[in-house]
Length: 307
Image (tube, rainbow, N blue to C red; front, top):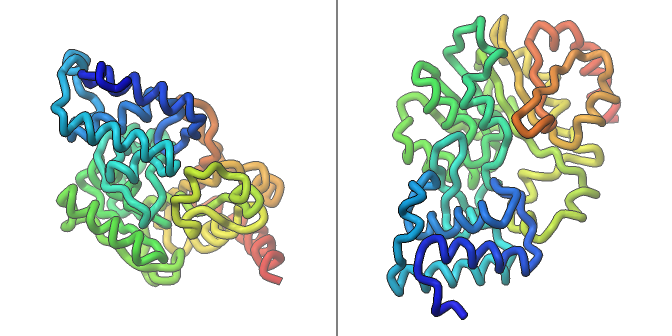
């Protein structure tokens, strides 16, 4: 059946058909079989995702074809995300190493990075930024790459994730402006202040995790689960962020499906829920002054959870 496959396009079409027939779940950087098949085939051939269409007719060597077919079958048999299988994913227009040390990069925050965080930073001139719960480092590294005058810190509690982040810092040759710091949220960042803090913390509930497709079980649980309502980390970030933001600093946090729970817990806090090209994605922006104004409400909710 596969003997007739010869070109890049042939292999992408075949992979997409096999993925759909196998009932795979898509959600790690892609939402459909064709895009995922394209990622698998092009990455396995060491080709960029924006390869000109004319190259689609290029024929694979026997070894290349064997490698592609092997990866297709592994994707189906193991349900492992393509990014882990090929060791690479693209985020905000940049390549990143990806493996089981951290979640597969897929945050909608990539769109904000590519748009220079407009309008949130239009009247500001940030110099320091923090990527909190950095995982692979993709958000912070992409910020530094898109904003060459920024210094960026990457913080995470997981040393394995930080080791991957450091490899990605080196990949993009940003060691002079980006550093990786082990920290349990802000605990390891005493005295540090930033003009922008961006975070994609864990926000999946235990109940939601139990219902996730097999693809997500290849990722570290530490990067996903955040209590009964998905807000264990987001609320701590809201409480402690003012101490680490400059006077006119901005906090941007992704909470996904926990958006509703957060609005119910803190109805008076003026979260601005950001609209993306594909619609709302559970990402809010808020200024430091607003966090200070509502500090008592945030502290009360956090204390009630601890008791």
